Length: 329
Image (tube, rainbow, N blue to C red; front, side, top):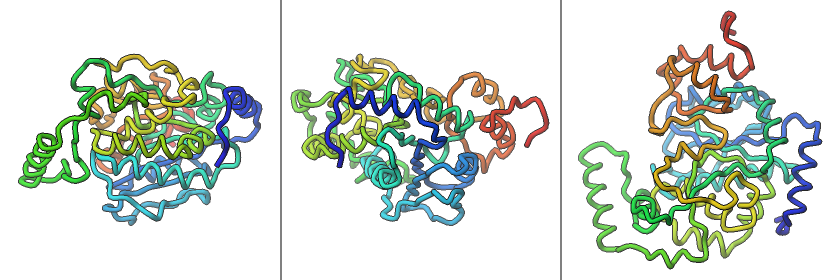
């Protein structure tokens, strides 16, 4: 593990990266499940980039292609449940694998889902990461802001890993009743239990440098503390890593060095490199292409290209930096 870097040494790393002539300074970490069509389409456009893939252990690997000689699949896969801590466990495995593929501590690990699509050429992303005024793309807002629905995400025990919310009836209703029972019996934590942490939330699709990831994960007491108080949180993948980062000096290296109250802002309002619909659930349609192109974002989510293959030509044009005025590639 690296020793804890000072703000000055982090600045030197970023300056070194800006001057670098290396074309590929990014590792893409993909968390996938279900149909591999969108995954294969996106990874095919990433060229020879370094890619680490975690596929939900409940999904078959059939159909997931190795698009790059520098693509690695996580072997110790996790069964990922919606809004559960298992999403954090899967991300930790991606980070662990990614760190073994990185040569420079200033390289970034960019997190994507298997339903993300590329909106601009990878070279433009590389330039953006090299020239950004901050090294850690992890915007966040404080959860303890007086708004009950924000605070209850971490104060209540949601138990989504234990009682899956995405099953079909009647199990969906049975599990919902079980989760309510857990909350009644278990009670709520007190905000005072979190005084040693800066508890924040944002979009889980971040881009962090290897130096940052390695350092915060090496702080065993901090990681253990965050794991203990957030393992039953709602959507901890939007909270855990953000809280680790903003509870250390690495938070100063973000667009939100002193996070303000989250308030009524949605997860999409904290997006870093992605265009995310405020609902978080809407799938991209053909009518969205112009807006995606105008957004200037590097990725869009979410897409189901098995159901909407008509999106592939215009999305491929965008990812290759083409105007879309000529014939499709």
